[in-house]
Image (cartoon, rainbow, N blue to C red; front, side):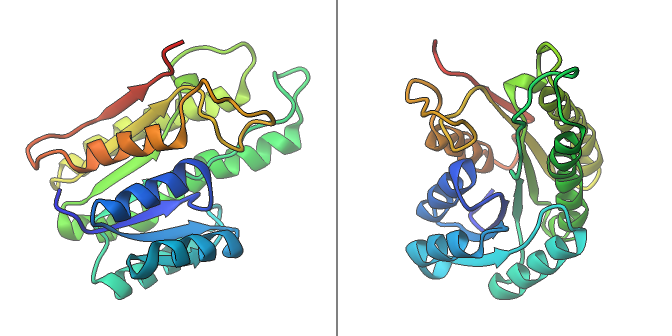
Length: 224
């Protein structure tokens, strides 16, 4: 796909911020969507006129719809969308897990992604655009008692289903499935694991594929 405008949820840090930087470097305009207006405002200032800060909550469909409408108005359309917003858990497992924490996480990881797709498809359908979603290696294997991993199984399954739906009108859908990434998701730094920039390169690889290529999944792991 030729460069255009990319909407990114969870854009304030980590994978989202790294992808925004990589996209602008590659000639894309970007819409930065996240709850932290301060962080995405600073990132938009860093990236310049190719970036638009769009504060909002991924768990609110109407806020994503408004953000996408504003982005399309600013740059003339939206050619790609990256559903990247996600949340983990403090308490692991099922027996020791916190049901309220599960509810909050599932609203972000599952409903937030669904709202991104629902809000984005009218824009993408106009241009045979591209939808991407952040999955996880945890969504490809069974992890003892992991409710977080199960949420990513949903992301993986839905991305495949959405790819079939989008194929009917020429759109493309890509699942980005990284192993452990060195982000603020973890309490301690993980310098020997994947870096956010590694995942951003995977996103750009899928976006830059020739028009006849549909990259359904990019699965990347640290070498160790």
